[in-house]
Image (cartoon, rainbow, N blue to C red):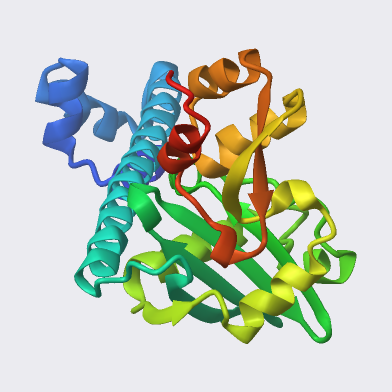
Length: 264
């Protein structure tokens, strides 16, 4: 590598010459000898490439850690705001609205009976889409959106990926104010009307004496954050958990189990 390119590369990597010789453990005079020759040894190219890769990885890892911590703090702030507003009715919630490209994004949060719930409603022209989301998964993952209408999906995909969509959502959740709302909100109701899958109902209702399917068990685990251990115990007793779109039928898991005299 020519010495001019070497010095330029050090600047790009935010390294000065003293830092470089200290890291590679060589005399500073050796560096001066390279300058007089006008070029560096071959091993320097490889070393700089490796250093750049490690620096990039470290920056990305640090950013992920910061974002994860910030999202965890946001979850706690949402919970505290919900509690401070004394939102105790089953229909009470917090709402966040914003625009992503041509799609209206609405997210709804509640902490009913000490359980965090998060719902997503997307609308584009006359199309609506509803799905529950697990905020714990959202902290570190970009959840797949099952059964989303193609016309909405086409608006939120970026090079075939939902990464930018979710990164944008996290930014809004971290920085934007949420408003007091309820599940009679017309956009939430329109989203529910678009939901043709009863397995995606937003609220827990009661137990039914029938086998719990593996798909339903996984849905309850993922969306309601109910541990698989608890769900397997309920399943072993011959029950399944029925969900509902009607908030007036909404109950906490603790109450549901108590009503059926089930002890885990």
